[in-house]
Length: 197
Image (cartoon, rainbow, N blue to C red; front, side, top):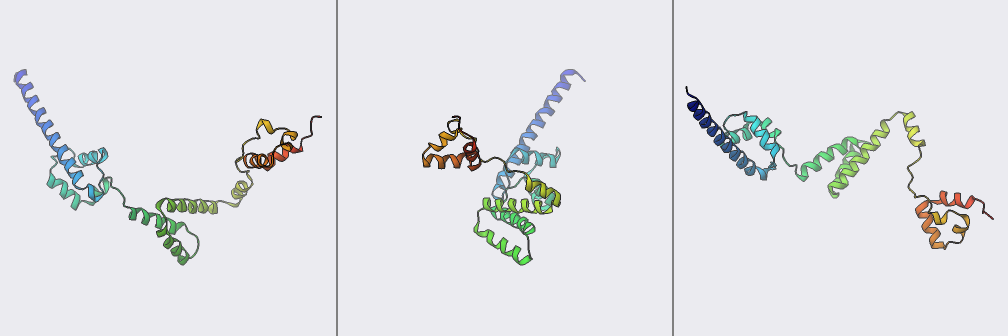
């Protein structure tokens, strides 16, 4: 066989492969768009999953629909949106397992979730998880946590007020602001220093 003939066959096969790839890509795109209203996300990850699932075989509309309807693992492997009701149901299950008390009290906590936004429910779940984690800690570790000082919530005293005289000559409104910003301990520490007379 001549090199010309081999090259011609190679190019012909390459053209067929490119046509099939383009056809597969069109079918996958139509499939994703067709099922988008059912929560299927149109994204590269789903395109890749479909192509891997068919592993080089021709992708047709019939084959895609058959896989969607009859192969639950194919359907589960594709990225899908969760509805708000699904998110709420999953959060309610988590809160039920984390909430302390009897089943009746847990049911009461879960029944109150319908009046909250999803963000509020997530905050409640996180708080219950934090409390459960603390409850499960050994007593020694709890003591260590209880004795560690909280992180500083106040700013250092401003340079203008680092003397006793400056604080004593400040207006009441300015002293209130200073207490709010720097804290009573810092102000008392400055007041406890002796004047430089």
